[in-house]
Length: 308
Image (cartoon, rainbow, N blue to C red; front, side):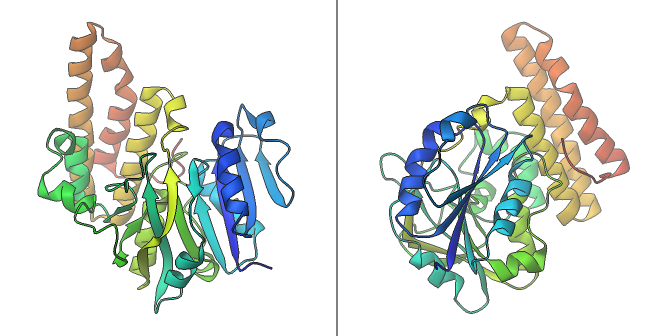
């Protein structure tokens, strides 16, 4: 029996899943697919022999689905793998990296369709309050080469050298089961997606564990197909709501409120700019829900609970 299990969380990813499963099965790992109420679920069936399916009637979000997958496996190592990621190597380099002294998890090299490393995504450093303020005010988008953004997106990483890192991408992340159990899994109170893997890495580091990157484990990654199926305003709400929850959980109160103020300011500025460009008040109206969430958090603090 393999020591490695693979968890693939899918939502409307049927056209990608076949190639992902075909490559994953070559590793002889145990595989669990957790489907979050896909509209194309019929296209997933029948799954190849030996692949288990957990079919959620509602979209429970990435964190809850990942926890379901972990709980369904008994292997000492579990790989989280996006359905649009196709393994090009064995998983042994990730297992070896997880066995380094003090290690809890490891990520590998994600490459695009041309074979280039996905720098800025496959490994990042943990966000600081300054990072998220600049993100919310669009400074990182307008000036991507600024020092804060370069550090956050780990653009100084040598993609061909192994290294201890802070935040390997959850799209291709192996975790030791014992550590997942110690942390109680992923925090399910984030939005349907975003920041739950960042939070998990942060909690691992806070407990004194190390995380590692190895270029010897490679997967070809398409990326972003599921989120593009969501309306733009919904995507924005999920991202900023999860950003605020992460900030409330991990930053001091003054830093958290500075992030809240940046989210309010950035949302208002974006609403005005988009309304002028579209000659419509709809963008301003669409931004109100997010402004209220960030404004209440600024005045009263985060109220906790799940983000939906």
